[in-house]
Length: 254
Image 1 (cartoon, rainbow, N blue to C red):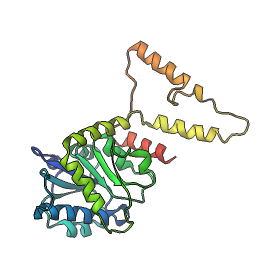
Image 2: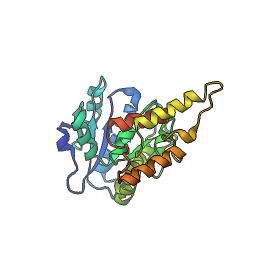
Image 3: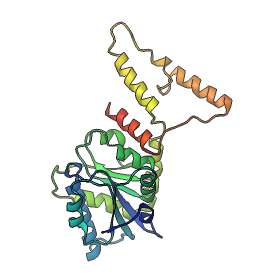
Image 4: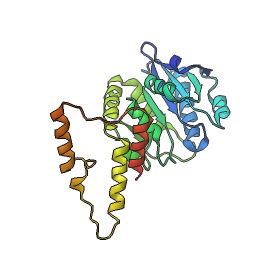
């Protein structure tokens, strides 16, 4: 594939972008990613999968296995490599995407899943570990089960991607739900959750949940919301960018 600037990776008329954003290392499911994309693009070229819209695959990230990944996918003009991205460039890269494909089974705190969802991307990832706490299968993305740790049969990944490529209405529903699911996921809420965990461990110091405004539905939270409404201020919610994403992933992993 060609190296392009993030601004050039956006969708053209009717084009769908499948996005990878992560360090380029084998332990992040890179082999499964390469094999899935290879089979998908080969099937597209052969015409064996009908009904696909124009699409491209954008790979953002750097790492020791980037040369290997280039060799696997360089024959496909639909694949674009951005190299390392960060800051505003990373935000533009997420904004250019439609589907976030991350077949990793080893993540502890997958910030990139939350970042992509906060940016309104439908997610395709493995049905393992903390992914289940972040992605609601069939609502904010697709959790693919029965996969192999090493690249094996990637049919389930291909099928998940094809189903989203063919169905723009489903992508839009998942995009909206994914973005909404990250609202309110802030560092304040994360630290509140951590503090509650510590408080439950203190002998003779029971934790008063109703006094914590970080607990949804608590008396303190209701009073805070009422004060905000009285002053006409909208509650500030997370969602969008690494801060909310990191906080959300940390809370999900707690």
